[in-house]
Image (cartoon, rainbow, N blue to C red; front, top):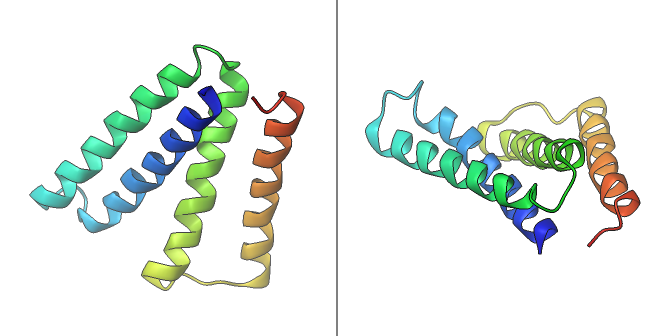
Length: 107
């Protein structure tokens, strides 16, 4: 269950990171509210996940999910460059996330 909470926390991390772009420096009320809500939910879910998972593993996976998701959505939503190198390094982070899950027992 902790891994599912961690995955969900990572997805909400992507949400608040993307929300920062839409909130225009937290100056637009509605996107700012969504950003703050996603941030709080992400933190609460991460806190629940680390009850059963090692903090180092959980934090690395949480930030990795956020980094991969945010960088990928930056390419799709904000026309950020999708160079071979950039996609390659995003893939390396993804491999790290999967690797940490596998060596941690994955349950």
